[in-house]
Image (tube, rainbow, N blue to C red; front, top):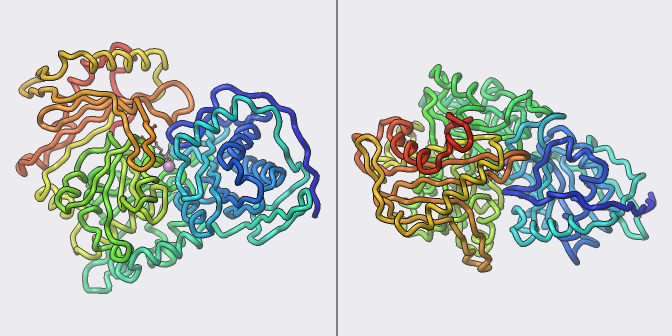
Amino acid sequence: MALVVEKVATSPFEGMKPGTSGLRKAVQVYQQPNYTENFVQATLTAGLGEKLKGCSLVVGGDGRYFGKEATELIVKICAANGVSRLLIGQNGLMSTPALSCVIRKYKTDGGIILTASHNPGGPNGDFGIKFNTANGGPAPEAVTNAIFEATKTISEYPICRDLKIDLSVIGRKTYEVNGQTFTVDIIDSVDDYCNYMKEIFDFNSIRTLLSGSDGRPPLNLLLNSMHGVMGPYVTKIVCGELGAPESSTVNCVPLEDFGGHHPDPNLTYAADLVNELKKGQHGFGAAFDGDGDRNMILGRNAFFVTPSDSLAVIANNMECIPFFKQSGVKGYARSMPTAGAVDRVAKAKGKEFFEVPTGWKFFGNLMDAGRLSLCGEESFGTGSDHIREKDGLWAVLAWLSILAHTKQSVEELIKDHWKQYGRNFFTRYDYENCESGSANTMMENLNNVISSPELIGKKFTEGSKSYTVAKADNFCYTDPIDNSVSKNQGVRIIFTDDSRIIFRLSGTGSSGATIRLYIEGYEADISQHHLDAQVVLKPLIEISLKLSQLRELTGRQEPTVIT
Ligand code: VG1
Ligand code: CO
């Protein structure tokens, strides 16, 4: 079928600057005439440059409200721009890690992900668009900056308005646009990813762990997909391939509004899972976010594994995962605010170690250069160089592999880890939706505090605890591969005992400002390891709040979320 290309005149919208992970805005903002079209066109123009004509792309999303409309627009605009092939997840669904996997497997020129990840969805929720490059990873800052520049000058976009596709039917459709062939492949959202997981892990050993067929009691799982995109992946892989009963999964039907909840796997928004695990019937629990790249791991009785510890435990047990036996274990990395547990494993194992700014895009270059195997963020992100996104289900399968191999429980593994390496106590306080002006004032004040020469060596006392400042700065990162520099990535104050307090503003919110306060304290003494992180870190939290005047400036006495 031959299609007509129409040129539509448009004008720029303000504020289309991608944040930590794509452009996230209220659905109503995206629904404005030409808003989505402008951003898609800018993404194609600046993201692909000369490769645009004749390129192939993967498109998929987390199933949130407005995803189908946006997918249809993308098809029409890609066709008109001379894109030669699109691979689209059935019904527009594809988890972020699966999309990364598909880009790499079919060697496409990149992909477009329709998600606002853990942000709420629905007509009054958020929507988001993110561009990934040919390595399967989130576009680096140079590319997202170029996209932003393109949004400022856009004056028209081409569209094949008559192109109608049925996203629900798997199969190939071809069209003719300006004498060239345009191919749309609707593919199964799970198959390629599932096959890859089978290559990476030893499914037999996980099957045995779950069924208890080696004489041990079966491991009862509870996996909560939070009505995000993960439902079909969990059903097919964990139930279908690994034989877990259906009762070990909840909230597996993707909903456009995630059932009205935040699809965010943390102790606050996944409280249902925590409460269920507290009953002691399950030996392992996990939750995923809307687009499936985050994971929260719990042991029996809701024993909470901090993402920083999860990363360190996986780093310490890489031999349990067949993929790394083949590819070898290269370096380890974490984002700056993530607690330093993995640093100690890297040191003990003699591996190269990297500390990068917040956001998965900073890991990609290191992986592409063959220097990084495993990395993570405190925000429930864990992943490896099998793809170029963090990967929630991969993390669960990694944990199950370790449990199968070591024959230990989650709690035993963590406690043994602390015994060997000491414990990095960690907590994050989120103050969501603060007024932007006061949040910015607070950050400005903090920048002044850290630039004062008197701060170094200064002693802060709270109750019976004292901390002396060893170093203070606003984190600046130079990428070791391409030497690109990312400044102002968070104010950090590091004390002489390696404790840290870190402040930064979120780059994933769609309105107002979210302040994140990260607190870390290290304890080598095993007699202290059982203590509650909130208790251990209380003096540091108090010091942070006083130093920043957060309560006075924002009027917030308590955080919205504590993890
Ligand atoms: C947050 C997390 C960050 C993560 C990002 C995207 O960013 O802190 O670690 O990479 O979300 O995760 P920010 O700027 O709000 O702190 V996701 O699951 O939204 O793709
Ligand atoms: Co996510």
